[in-house]
Image (cartoon, rainbow, N blue to C red; front, side, top):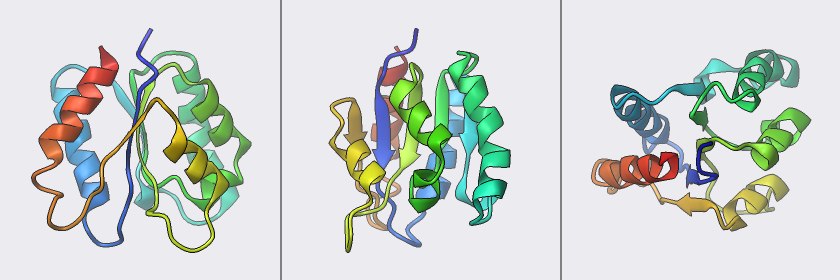
Length: 145
């Protein structure tokens, strides 16, 4: 059974967090880790569209067929989907995700994720996105062991 460690990268618009998440996934796949999940550009802002893409992936994850699950940008859309909330709460696999930087009215699920003991948060900025890569890969690999 995989470790219950979740690695989160708070997104700042336009700094390359999705690109960085993809590079981390490529690195762990090249190390033989199974990865599934989704990136923000793969679904439109519509609950039905989001769930038609995401729910089959969540079912696979709950069935234990994957070791690392990617949720790029845990935001409002995920709040409306019970499947996302249940997956985050019940998952025994490691999750690599991005969450928004706190500003304005807090999103309950985002704050729950941010405050979890099994979450490691990396702040990604234009200045850190290239140098933080190795740290994130190491954290993900540690979670998978």
